[in-house]
Image (cartoon, rainbow, N blue to C red):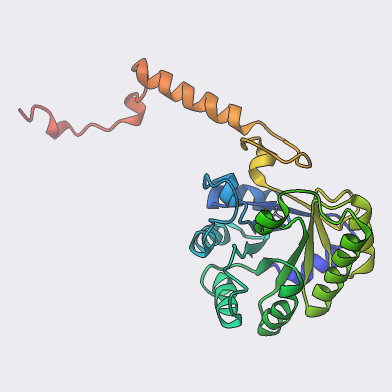
Amino acid sequence: MPTTRDLSTKAGVEPITMLTAYDAPTAAVVDAAGVDVILVGDSMGNAVLGYDSTLPVTFEEVKSRTAAVARAAEESLVVADMPFLSVGVSEAESVRNAGAMLKEAGADAVKLESGPHTVELTEKLVRLGIPVMAHLGLTPQQVKRTGYARQGTTRDEAREILDLARAHEEAGAFSLVLEHVPANLAAQVTEAIGAPTIGIGAGPDCDGQVLVITDVLGLSDYAPPFAEQFGDVRSEMRAAVETYRDAVEAGEFPTAEHSHVEEELDELY
Ligand code: KIV
């Protein structure tokens, strides 16, 4: 069983790899490819659920998809993202929801979009045995306040991110996602804390990197400028679907090979 400790051991020795996945077949591919961490991100809102932000994503949506991913993953660490308002409303509800991701959905850890308000909660969850990955910089659940702009671009903002990174490490977070921040800030945070940093749009000096799977596969309608498309699955899907449509329309599918005949059912009328 993968543990968060395995990740700390890898940090600084080899880059840590993390990708999102939201269903069992994709998780099986990501796991078999040897990616260290599968994040069941609330990015599923934009990536696969057809929402235009992560705000509408529900606790039940993430929990059910985390369960699917956890059933498929054998080696990768599975991290469930806590969606908007599933933590933070009250401590009791936050603990119950984060706990359910481990207890009922089979996640190995949870990720919280972090800020000053998540330091105490992180400490509480970690004490209870719920490993926490923190997330600073651009936190898309704050979209109504910050938009999707790069964060930590002034000295004050950068210092705040550095201080919060330290505070979350002290609270027991086993890792920290840094999203859409200047590369030189991410490098200094990585230097300053012992917990592995995982960057997305945060330059090359983090302990690891994460991207959204649909961006990597070339399946997204829109990808942020810091993402990279490593495949063209949309074209592959389109070609397969069109080939299927053509075969049905031409009467070429199904063939005898795809069909079953029971002799005694001949001449029913
Ligand atoms: O929801 C998500 O997929 C994320 C990553 C982009 C870090 O938070």
